[in-house]
Image (tube, rainbow over all chains, first blue to last red; front, side):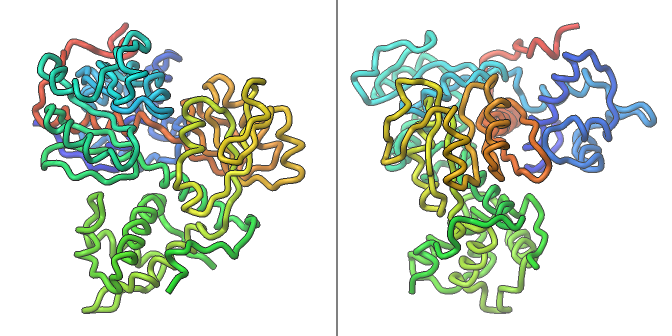
Amino acid sequence: MKPVISPATINRLPLYFRTLCLLLEDGQKVISSAEFSRRLDVTVTPEQIRKDLASFGQFGKYGVGYYVRDLAKTIDQLIGYHNCWSLIVIGLGNLGWSLINYKKIAALGFRLQAIFDVDEAKVGKKINGISVYHLNEMMVFSRENPIHIGVITVPEMEAQKVANLLVKAGVRGIWNFTTQRLNVPKGLWVVNEDFSIGLSNLSYHLSNSGIIPISDKYILNKVSEG
Amino acid sequence: MKPVISPATINRLPLYFRTLCLLLEDGQKVISSAEFSRRLDVTVTPEQIRKDLASFGQFGKYGVGYYVRDLAKTIDQLIGYHNCWSLIVIGLGNLGWSLINYKKIAALGFRLQAIFDVDEAKVGKKINGISVYHLNEMMVFSRENPIHIGVITVPEMEAQKVANLLVKAGVRGIWNFTTQRLNVPKGLWVVNEDFSIGLSNLSYHLSNSGIIPISDKYILNKVSEG
C-alpha cells in the first residue's frame, strides 16, 4: 500500500525530483539535507525536507545523507512519471500552442495524443506530429485511444461544456487553465492552473518591502463599492 | 507594522479573496468558516481557514461568522492589489500573447505598461493599446516609466540575460514562466510559474487511484541509467 502524503509535500516532490536529476547529471551520489536545501531553487528548510521524505519512507543514512539515485527513483515511482499518462489538449489558442511546445510534458513521461478545437481552419493540421481534430470527434477518438488527462485551454465560457465532454470520454484528470471552476463527478481529479496566485504572491511581497507603487488610490471596485 | 504570514497562507489568500468577491456579488454579508470552506473551490478545512485568518488579525465574531466585506478589504490591502503595480512582458510568443490577454492582470489591479521582443516584425505594433518595443529600448523606457514587475516568457536560454536586463532596469519582482532558474540579487522577488507541478500533481493522483496507465515500462532515462 502506498503512503498518504500531504498535498503540500506532493507539490514539493517535483522540485526535489528536478534537483535530484541535476545532481545525478553532476555525478553526485550522496547529499545531506542541508546541502539539498541549498541546491533547491525555492526556500525549503533542511527540517522540512527531512519531514517530507520521512513521510513516504526511510532514506537518509545518519551522518552520510540521502542516496541521490535511490531517492530520485522512489519519487519518480511515487509521482508516477514512469506511467506514461496520455493527454489531450482542447483549445488551440495561444496558451494551447505554448503547452504543445512545452518540453516537460514529454520529459516527465506524459504522452500528448491529440489536440481538439472547433476552428475548421485548424482541424486536420498536424503540429509536432500530433493531429488536430474537431471537438465533435472526441468521443470517437476516446473509444480507440485511452485518454487519462484533458487539458482545457478554451475560453472561460466554454470550459464547463468541454469538461462535461471529457467526463463522457472517460478522462480521469483535468488540467484546467481557465478561470472557470469546473463541476465534475467525484473521483475525477482537477488541477486548476491559477495565474492569479503568482501575481498575488508578487504583489504581497512588493507591498511588504517598502516599494512605492504607481498609485495607492486604486481600489478594486467590488470591494470599495457600497 | 504588517504581520508576517506564512508562504502557504499567502498562496491561499487569492483563493479566499476570489470567493469573498463572489459572496459580495451575491449580497452575502456574513459567512461561517464551515460555509466558507464549502464555497472554496479547493479543499481547505474550516480549521485551516480560521488559522490562516487569525495570522493577520481578529475577524470572525463568535457564533456569527466573518464579515465578508471587511475581510475582503483586509485581504485586498494585505496582498496590495490596490497598489497598481506596473508590469512589462518580455517575449511575445504564444505564452506572452496569452498573458497579455489574461483579464485578471487588470482585474487584480496590475497595469501592463509595455511589451518587449527582439523580433523586428513585432516591434512597433500595438496590442490592446500596449506598445511592443525592442528589448534594446528597455533601459530607456525604464528611465521614464517605473517598472515593478518583469514577466519573462522568452526561450529558456535567453531567460537569464533578460533577468539581468530587468535588474538593471530596476524591477523589484520577476514572474518567470521559463524552466530556467534565475540568479538575481537579494531583495528581488522571483515567482517561478512551474507547469511541471500541476502535471506531477495529476500524475500522483492518477497513479494512486488504481488507474491503468498506457505502459509502466517507461522510466525516465536519467533515473534508470547507470
